[in-house]
Length: 84
Image 1 (spheres, rainbow, N blue to C red):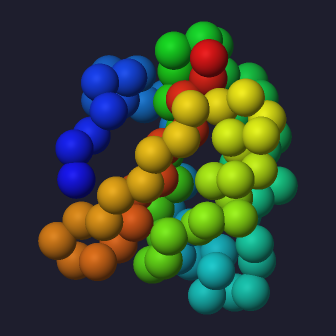
Image 2 (cartoon, rainbow, N blue to C red):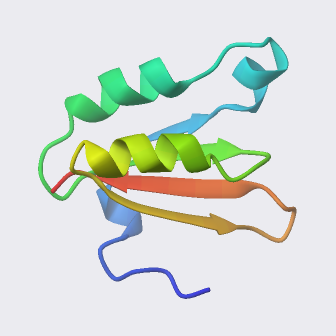
């Protein structure tokens, strides 16, 4: 899968590894929503999950964010939300 050109490492301002939260039964969407709201245009929020967070992607896209998910070699999904 090709990474979109709007995703640049230097623009990733927040990275959340959601695996510990998910293991505790905590859904990270509210945290993602709150923290991504503080981003400036062009900045990116990255979340790492053991599955593709499709409902979160749909909600963030509807909120006006650019979105992209890709799996790494370990099967973990890195999902990016870019502030437009």
